[in-house]
Image (cartoon, rainbow, N blue to C red; front, side):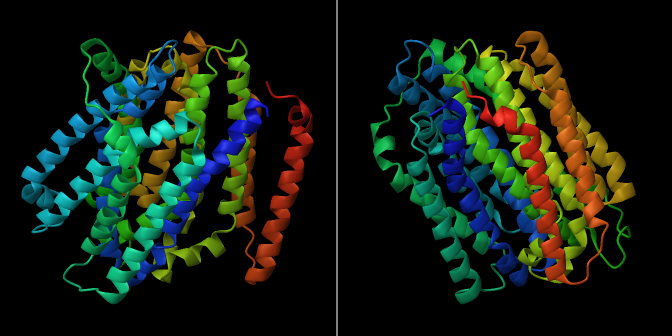
Length: 480
């Protein structure tokens, strides 16, 4: 099997382990929106955004460092596993302990006064996630996507059952969104059992030279991961800070935040695709780095990745009239117009992750720090300028501006230090045309949903035929 076909196959399998669980989690949105008011849902979204951002700190880029150091010539994988696991558990233990000791004041800052217990639960969730991060990375390195998928799907199945039990059977209003946090904690505890053999085999070790080298390699990767999380967290937190109280008629900023957060859930369809690809692509890039034809291979991978994302952008972007029903109450539908922008934002984030291969393979991960800091500045400035004028449309545009600028800078630097012959013109043509097509189709209002669905399906079919006509020669070219 060719390298590209193998990558595609593993992406599908990792998709089962990431997209399928997240899609099942997405099915919880109607349950949550039916149980909680937009204000409460906004609080829940902020809490989960905090977890997503802090998880990046807890893992500290050790997954990528583990891949890099395990694939070096003559490397002892078990030794690297022990060192990476020791570093990640040590860091997460310190961070979780700090959150436990400051739970009360942090609860006030996070908008859940009197609920220090929720902060402790969130800390425990993140500690567990960090503890099993390297075992999950090991499955990716060993190309065991089926076991990876089984673990993820079992976890989300437990999460769905617990959510249903707590919110439909045992629900008490005083507990509120705390039930969702508790469900996540209990479901994540399953991972400790699932990886018990791997965790028992772990022998805590610290090697002054190798461990410090891994930390030096990993922290810029951690900062790079924070870029995506910063965007998501800022889009929520800054709406509270910078949205004028009377911007939306008869809506508080907290209510607007809940509506925007629900729209973000739909855009995660693209985010999940990016994540599934990253799971397969990261070890793929490292394992093929020594191949003399790797630059051409990486360029081809990125081009096909963009094509797949454009298909998803079109498919989701023109079918919001169907996808909106996953949000439950019609109250949440008024923010749907920002979804295409958020989908496009995630597309550029995925391209950026592909482009970062150059500084990961040349051990110049500190460039990730510079790009990330620049992206954070762009995010903050754009939100500050746009939210008071455009509301959550401004926040959506801020995400797009940030990810696009990071992609451009990473590409320009990469061509200097590790040239890869990306087909920039053709790829950008796909992105621009697809975006324009989404807005053109959405401008055509069809009242009958069945007629609209057939029309949208026809558009997608013609689009796919067009892609085949343009790419058929490349498709038939043997993959290296």
